[in-house]
Image (cartoon, rainbow, N blue to C red; front, side):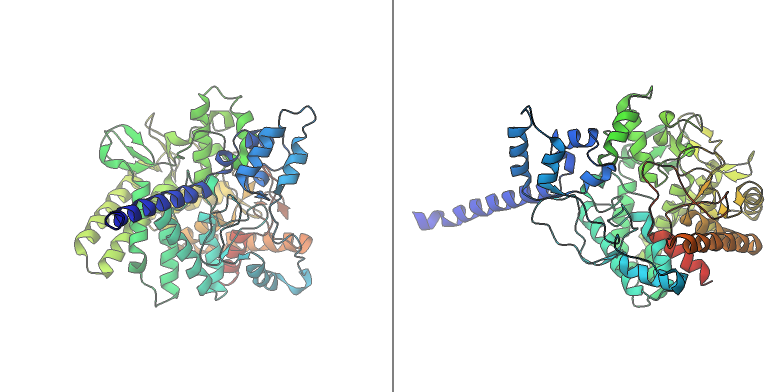
Amino acid sequence: MMSQNLPGIKIIVLTCLLFISGRLFAQHELSPKQTYPDLFERVQLARIYPDSKSFADAIPKKQPSEIMKAYHTLKNNQNFNLKAFVNEYFNMPESHHAAYQSDISAGIEKHLDTLWTVLKRDPDTVSTYHTSLLPLPKPYIVPGGRFREIYYWDSYFTMLGLQKAGRTKTIKDMVDNFAYLINKYGFIPNGNRTYYLTRSQPPFFAAMVQLLTQHNKEVKLADYKDALEKEYSFWMKGVGQLGKGKAINHVVKLSDGTILNRYYDAGNQPREESYREDFEAAKLTKQVPATFLRNVRSAAESGWDFSSRWFADGKSYNQIITTDLLPVDLNTLLYNLETTIAAANMEIGDKTKANLFKQKADQRKSAILKYFWNKKQGFFTDYNWKNRSLSNQLTLAAAFPLYFKLVTPAQAKAFKEKLEKNFLKPGGLITTLSTTKEQWDAPNAWAPLQYISITGLRNYGYDKLADTISTRWINLNISVFKETGKLMEKYNVVQPNSKGGGGEYPLQDGFGWTNGVLLKLMKK
């Protein structure tokens, strides 16, 4: 009797084990707020750490269940000290390069070469206790400072420098890590943290694969075809059920049936890495808090967190309307994704699918030129799909169609003239024409947007202006390095030899994409 039922018992036991392991695996990927309910909110709102990201990245000394049991036992005691409790049960996240001292006398190129090692992380292992880090199987480069994990769109610009430094193996490792994230989660998160699992970032994965295949002939686009198609499915999720004039997730169908995309975070609560800031900001808006917070989170997905670009009145953070806008840069990147998928399928001889994605790319190109070209401004701007109007905000996002070679010669000429007249400053190009306290506005400038603009100009023969921007940017980077021994996340290009400012956190040094773009431009 027992022997006859043994197979059934084995199946039941195996099912239970799989269920338990699945529960444990899922628990390991809970965000800090989910792992430490109430405790997390209290710590963040009490500002135990000056930077909200610190506790989101904190390393527990014991299992979360033990920490929560102790917390519930002690929290109502009259003499309960929240800060002492946190210090007893958590370690601050490590600062990997805090001990690094640069040698200014050795020169900028030696500094850049050294930083690849300083900012490199070995493959992650699953920690004994729950942390917010999502482990990656291969080595990778982090931006630096408070950014202790890989970041999606940062990594493309870091790779530009890695390529010039001859570190193609590291590029492949990072591309493989991103493919791993796509296969595991269906998309590339903002960074490899559990609290980033609600959003992505500007989709540069196709550009990364293109860069890798250009400099490693053993790698083909087709090697990453499945990952590319899965990422595309993430950005297009829900498109089949969409009516005209409606939006779902990242997809918008306009009244004429045109399909375009927006940034859209799946969450509508305060960001865990900026919890107190978002909690307080939500009190100051007239929007429904959930709507406001989704717009805030969606702007974080854009990478431009934050900028007047996303504000209804062009100046007020509490009027943020990210999800109402179709961004020109996002749609240009998705055009590149579509063309890359078409090419990958052509490599394996699947002409039907290749033609399908070629058609999608052609349709998107037409839509970009129709909906984002602002004739009045002679510039590309975002499009507000809700009120069917072009944005009045002029930003360096306008360079993306030139970078991917989508525009007419007349449009390129108009862009060049506007750039030279309004954006060019002593240290390079300002990000927008609005001067606010937001870090993605004037007078700040960022390495990725310098590179996109410079390359876009070169694509249409405007080498003189491209050289001017490049020289000014290189000189600014080097002058600040000679003064401080550091390369910065952002710079003030209006005041000579100035570091950037603004934003939710102090100016960071390191800095992955600054290093990559600087080396790329210096080696041209």
